[in-house]
Image (cartoon, rainbow, N blue to C red):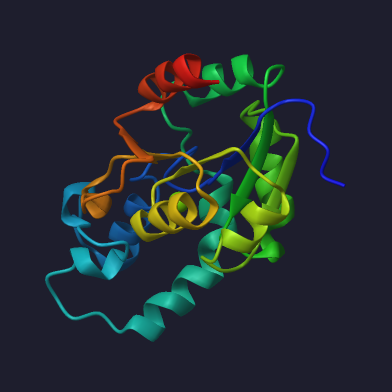
Length: 192
Ligand SMILES: [Mg+2]
């Protein structure tokens, strides 16, 4: 079970393979705001608003529109080229908090954007430990700070953390903060 022929990479989707700011224009349109990524200082879009926002209402709007928003998400710079280089060298396992309901739209996005994958798993929650453990991944790629720290500490694997305004807290030694996919690729080339 879980026999690996190559190193297996666990990769988050939103804010990692897609740009961290790709959902913001949708939010601005809905709420008539001018939020920018730098305003999002916690892993919570509501942290960017200056006016009070009904969290339940926001969640409802998000749920109703997420399939569309995911279908038009922007790919992070250089991610496609690098993942393409990696696909013959490593196993690419995407593990996302997205709900299973958006599997089809997610898979279609990968096809349309020519992003290679060996497996896509939508777990519907932010608890990625179980899935990462089950698939025995050798490294993880994340943008969510607490996920990165948990995965690194519990599984004792390196985690590449894509730097964003909402994940600037301190990290342990085996969480490697990178600014972009080129830096991630440099680290992988040196270590895998
Ligand atoms: Mg993410």
